[in-house]
Structure formats: C-alpha cells, structure tokens
Image (cartoon, rainbow, N blue to C red; front, side):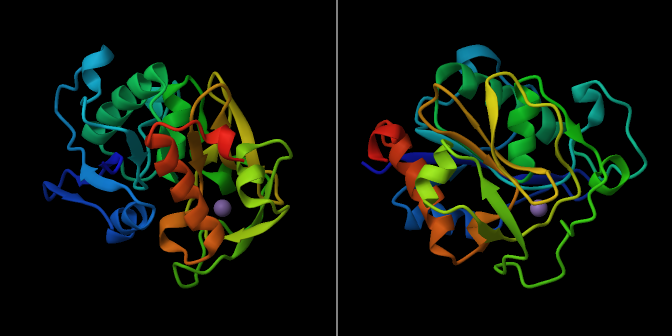
Length: 240
Ligand code: MN
C-alpha cells in the first residue's frame, strides 16, 4: 500500500474554482505516494474528526496570503488576496495534524499556515517590514534556484541534504516572523529571513518557503521522499 498524501488546493472565491499545479501531485507520485485532494469544507470539523482516516500525511500547498486577523494583526496594504474558506480549513486541518503527529509538509504559504496554526506570526510583507534587500520574488524560470538557503546544523534538513548551502527558487513576499510553539528554524537565506522550519519530537513536520515541487534538483526530491517515507509509518530520524 502506497502512503496516501492529502494535498490542499488553492481556492478562488471570485470564480469558485479550486486549483493545484500538477508539480505537487507529480512530486508525491515520484516519491512513491498516492496524492489525493482535500477540499475545504465551509464548516470544517474540529478535533480528531478534522483528519480523514485514510490519510498518511498532509501536504499544504502554496497560494495566496493569509488573513492577518488570524494571527492577531490588522492588514497592511501590501497584504495580498486572501481566501477565508481556505484559511479556516487549512488551519483546522493543520492543528489536528500537529496534535496527532501526522507527517506534514508545508510549502510556501503552507509553511506559513503551519506556523500560524501553532500560534506563530508572519511578516505580511518582507520589503515593508524587514531590512532585507534580497530578491524573494524571482524573475526567472520556476525550476531555477535564484538565492541560497543555509540549513542549520543538527536540523533534519541539514541531515537530509548533507550540504551547507543550496540554491532554491523564491516566490514569496511574506515570511515567518515569530515561530509557532514547538517549531525551530531549519534554514535561513543569507539576509536572515526564515526559509525552513521543522518541529522537534515529530515524525516529519517540515515547512519550506521555496517551491521544491517545481525544481529538478535532487536535493528537492529528497524532501518528498523523506516525507512519503515518514508517511509510510517509518520514523524519519532512523533513516539518517
Ligand atoms: Mn526566498
């Protein structure tokens, strides 16, 4: 039986359409998992019922911005389009997954959702709220790594990669600010922006700010295979 990975799609209120780039499902399939879509319910279940019982892991995909009221802030004018339906569904799902120890992989917005679900905050806009001058909204082909990330020693990410510096793609204007409870930094970019987070004492909980599903580099495939392996019921740290 292949591990079943639930993926959250994007939702556009104006058109009523769900969307998900094929790169996500292709990356899960290449790593040996079976991807399924998780559609947001208008009234998400809470507690243990929030997690469908057929899931072995959850991938929170990228997308638009998160409603700042959900992390206790008023919106800056640089905050982009938000989806209340997606926000409430993903936060509920994520809290249940963190509580139950289900393997979680958050990509771009997904990493920010994980952090907010655990009580953390994000910068609504990197240029407006930080001193960073690094280009995080790249103008280059999607698979191309345009800036470096530096994994922290002793992080799961460093163990998976065995490298001190990897070039990643970058399509974000927001970033993790205050870490959520139980999360630690797994990698920074050279400007000090948090580019990856992970959670101690969890089978596999990783958030990355870049889009590994859109990159061909083998380092990125390693993230998906570690995730799917953990979803298969194996303790990730035993494999390092
Ligand atoms: Mn970046």
